[in-house]
Image (cartoon, rainbow, N blue to C red; front, top):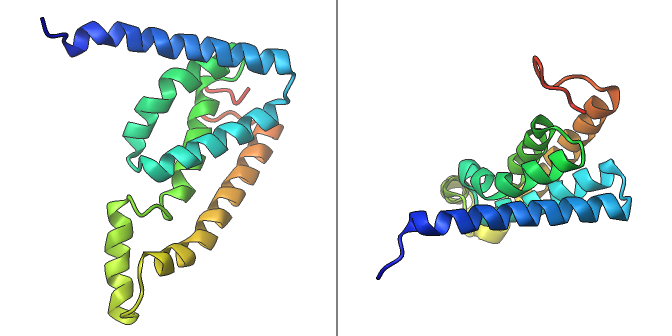
Length: 156
């Protein structure tokens, strides 16, 4: 008898919840400052974004674990979403998996015939790093001041 996707879905949900709870307990017991947790989440999401370029696909992979995990350590879901958007914005410019990267390579080759993936990546990497650093700094200022992320959406 073949198993259907719906019969596997509850196990995937259980796995995500178990992972979220275990990670939240690890964060609580380690005493890591919240700022370090934010930086670790940003780093993880940036690496995942290099391989999974679709923002909605990446969110559907990360959210079931990250949102409950961070909520268990008193970080609102809106803050997790802001961290996700920061990680998603900068690293998309660097990944060769993105269809826009290949399109940009085509435009670049109109002016530099010998340009390849490495050339374009070396041109976009400083921009991606600058975006990641500036968005992260802005987020920490915003978070430090406690400014809400939107109506009814506290940052803490």
